[in-house]
Length: 103
Image (cartoon, rainbow, N blue to C red):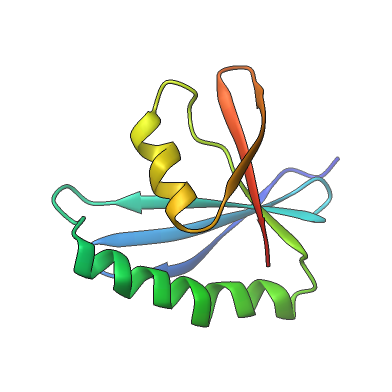
């Protein structure tokens, strides 16, 4: 199996959106890294638009059908944040919550 390949899909002063292409690059998992104090309802609306208009079409163009996220099981705040972007939990494994959504 090939190691994951990480790519930066978006970055500004408040957030970085990274993705790892995993399992021989047939699956993709996203990472959202927010800087401290970078979260607000208006910024969420902006980032949700970027996610829908830039990130999902980019992944769709690469023929991905689903995107995954794996927040820590004890990080309820991260799980709720990821759910706000349309991800749904489908399993728990090894201290992680496995979430996915369609592209």
